Image (cartoon, rainbow, N blue to C red; front, side, top):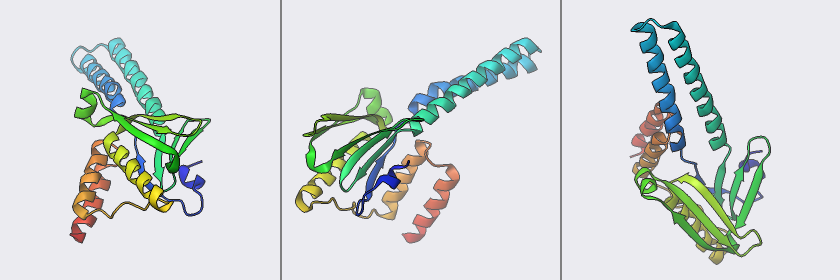
Length: 201
């Protein structure tokens, strides 16, 4: 069941964080190198057994990429105007909610590579029995942290966080570029949406 189907009356999504796709890079590289090796074995050396072996290795790497992609996409990190939700699992799902009113502290952590490549983790400390909720390996962790802190502040003053201020077309294009770089949208989707936003400027 999607998180959208679990929203309560009057509840709306303010921000959705995404797991980084960087763990896929070595496996995609393995697919590419195996295919190159298969091509060399067939075209330069005329060695069918070596070509077959390289092809099998490429299939193994490709299978690993698909499995890891499914695992990554099985994680949902959502901020609503009432809570922060972490939901994960492929066949069975596990959901952890943190009410905005019970959040005491929000931390984000990034290694040097995380800062350079734009990923890290966010940890939420709450007054509930669940204690800390950790969002591992997400893209733009500082942006997610700021969104949570803004929602918490709005919730404490009004009892419900307000939707974020509308972004300008230029800011929306920058966000789209980030989604494109993360592989969350295709180049065709990026260009189509970019043209729409340019028309609004």
